[in-house]
Image 1: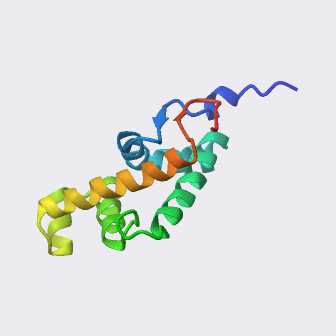
Image 2 (image 1 turned 90 degrees about the horizontal axis):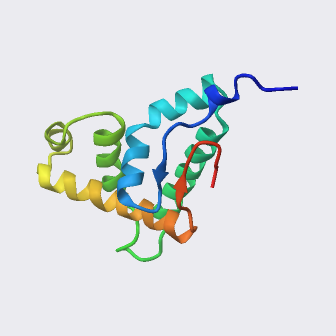
Amino acid sequence: SVDLEKKGRELDTSYELNSPEGVKMLLENIYKLNERRFYKADYDASTILLDLVAAVKVARKQKSLADRLTDKQWQCTNKVLIEGYTYEEASEIFQISQSTVHEHVEKCLQKIATVFSNWEYGKIESGNSN
């Protein structure tokens, strides 16, 4: 049989997950991806989201302190990129400077991108899960 709705379920954005910019774009679109995953049965979105969860877990368990994703780095990134708070609002919530929030977000993005890079994970496009 022919899947007439396949095109409507496919991911229509590309993410360079081995770069901080690609990880940032992914996190900024996480709600859209979740919607596509659950309401449109988008298999690409499911794969990317599951891989993101795995990459965060790996980054949080790095042996080297310099490479390890800290709770504060992830919390700041979550507030700003996923929940949509401004850097100013996040700085008030965490009682740290805006520049420190920015540094935490940048370090988080780099650490997650490094995990994807180590996995040789490159550009993700519609119909391509890895």
